Amino acid sequence: MTRSACAASGTAILAFLVLVWAGTAPAGQDIPSSQNLLAASRQAVFVVAEGWNSPRAELAAFEREEAGGPWRPAEPAAPALLGRNGLAWGAGFDEAANPADPRKQEGDGRAPAGIFRIGTAFGYGPAESAAFLRLPYIPLDKTWKCIDDPRSLHYNRIVRKTGVARPNRTGCEEMLLEDHRYRWGAFVEYNSDPPRPGRGSCIFLHIWLDPATPTSGCTALDEERLLRVLRWLRPKANPVLVQLPRHEYVRLREFWRLP
Image 1 (tube, one colour):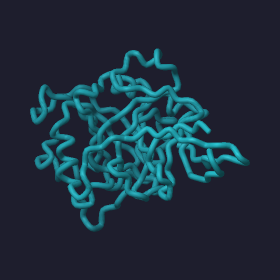
Image 2 (cartoon, rainbow, N blue to C red):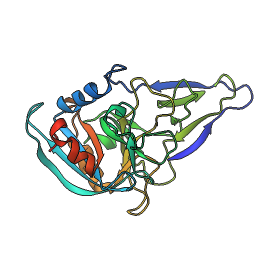
Image 3 (cartoon, helix red, strand yellow):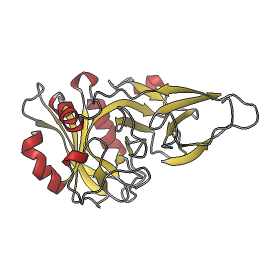
C-alpha cells in the first residue's frame, strides 16, 4: 500500500464520497457476532500461517451447501503473503486472545487474525472488464483513497476525492498504484462496525508484488489464484476470510467448526 497526504491547497474545495463498509457486529458482542459471520457463511477463504510472526501462509477456499453444514474444498491450498510482521488478533477478537498474543494496531505491519466478511471487489479495469465477477465492483481511478489516519472521521473508509473545503492532511492509501498489486482485489470488512481508531485499516485481498515481498497488513497471492477466488465468491453465500496462525487454528477448530 502507498501512503500519501490527502491534501488540498489554496481555496480548492475537497468533498469526499464515502463508501461505508457495512458490518453486523454490535459493540460489546465481538466474539459471538464474529462467530455468527462464519456460521452464516457458505463460502470461506482460510489463511493459515505457521506462527504469529510469519509473513508466509497457505490460503485455501471451502464451501458448503447450507449454513452450518460440513465444509468441502473449493480451491486447494496455495502460497499467500501476509503483513511483513505476520499476524495479530484483529479488533473484535481480544477475548479470544491470550495475554501474550499480539493485537492488531495501525502501522504494525501485521495482518488481522479472526473472521471477516469479504466485501466489494476492485480493479484497474472498467466495469465491463469485471463482468465475470459476482461481487460488486469498483473501477479504480486516481480519486479513490482509503483513509488510514485514526484521527480522521473517515478512518478505515474508502473515499472518493472529488473536490476540499480547506487544506486536509489526512493520511490515506492510494488505491490506483503504479504497479500491479491492486489490478484485482477485494475489500476485507475489517474493523468496520464501527471502526476503532488505531486498530488497523485498509485491509484487502490483492495480488502480491512478487512471491517474496510481504504486505503492510493485507493478504496477497498470485494473480491467477486470486482471480480464481474472486470468480468463485458470491455475495449471497456470505463469504468470509478466516486468518489464524496454525496453533490457533488447531485450538479453535472444534469451537469454530473449522474444516
